[in-house]
Length: 138
Image 1 (cartoon, rainbow, N blue to C red):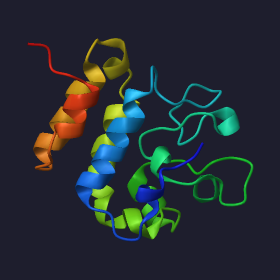
Image 2 (image 1 turned 180 degrees about the horizontal axis):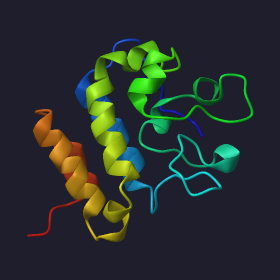
Image 3 (image 1 turned 120 degrees about the vertical axis):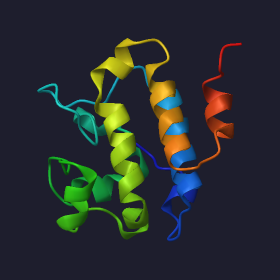
Image 4 (image 1 turned 180 degrees about the vertical axis):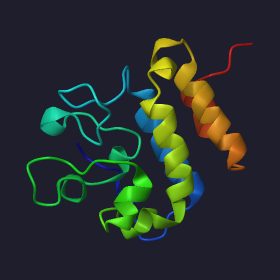
């Protein structure tokens, strides 16, 4: 899985991170899971990524191991496994991780868009990119 170059910059705004997750989410039809059915930063074979895993390169996710990093975003930060460019956004990343990991959001039509919209409102972010990828029904 390839990460957009603009998401690899040293200094990312919260809006850039959020918009990157929205674009990733728009291409997903289900949450990213391990073979055992738990949420994962990368799926087996690395073909798909969760909202946070999509912000990390394969080297950052696997760190030289056969299995990807795991656990909540704040745990990755505490263990030194979260890229430094994402540290300022840990609180928002936890919100986004919760949206991704909630099976109900994937089952309910519009659930992912609703969850992302709540994060945008909570974090005072623009919904312009969200509205482009998940249009609000009139």
